[in-house]
Amino acid sequence: MSLVVPGTLGVLVSRNQSAIPPITEAEYCRRLSILGRRSGLSVMAFTAEGVSPEKHSIRGYAYHNGVWTSGRFPLPDIVYNRCLHVHEGQNVGHTLEEMAEQKSRKLLYWSRNLPGKWQVYRVLHKVDEVRPFVPPTTPYRDTAQLMEWLRRHSGLFMKPQAGTHGKGTLYLRLAEGDRGLLIQGRDSRNRPFRHLFSDLDAGLSWINGITDQRAYIVQPYLKLTSQSGRPFDVRALMQKDGHGCWRLTGFAVREGRKGTLTSNLHGGGEAHPAEPYLREQFGADSTRLIIGQMMKLSQTITGALEERYGRLGELGIDYGIDRDGNIWLLEVNSRPGRASFFQIRQPKCAFRAINRPLEYARYLITQSKTTGLQGMNASLEHTV
Image (cartoon, rainbow, N blue to C red; front, top):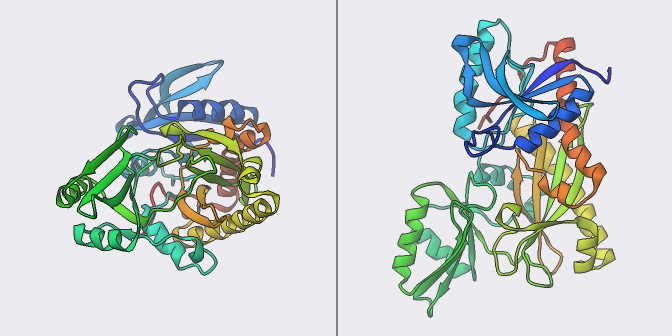
């Protein structure tokens, strides 16, 4: 396969009116544009609002010679969905398909996206090699269920099924001699909060008000903190390369502030190279075992999810490690960020994190031209 494959990659992102250009992930798209141009792949970013079937074009943004410019573009060769919200991708998917039909062609998608956290947990819990690392998990139903779990566990962790960046996460435990409820977490703007309800029913009612707005899952609270008491997790970035094969791009530790619940960078956390951080926490021998186990798990998880949901392009897999060195699978994200891999100052890893999506896009374009593969194994959304 030639290293230079001419083509266009359209990155579908969400709108961010306060940014310039008014899109999310502008910095990521900028890096994609710079690297893509070196190998003949043009990159343009667009939002759902920019898709106009009646004009047979897409209003988007391109980065060239150090500046962003807006303009109209034809339907790209391949669509890479980075939308923040599921409904955005669903709505624009129909419109893009309409445009493709007008041009008598089919859409080629870079990857599918995974469904909500509960569906993913349910799939992975059926995999023998993964099940021991999956925390007990259930979708939130009602306060009676929550009380049963509160009495069974010393604390609970709740998170939105479709949440990102640690927003909306909750920690719960009984208080005031089991007559009250302590709730800590982060609101929709990622601001930390703490409520102590002296009346248990009042606390449960407050929870119901939150869960009426979005679906949540419930898990036992796992104490996943460093020796200094800071929450941390390990992000494994799995990506497909220019031959369509899964590769581990790298590991990065994300460490939150002391006293907070999550380690997410958007909540004020910071990133560290994984191996030296884990050696300091668990020693050299245990770290070798932990990293080896995470590598094996990551390969198994990518295979299991791709078998269930169809072709995927990259996965961010988050692991928690308790003080005894036990590994817990926290989350799998099909639209992972890669900021942590730039913060840890490992240039080769950071380069791969950006370049591998381009390599995979060129591979798919080449395959579509030689075999006629045109979006048969991927779509903007998952199939449940």
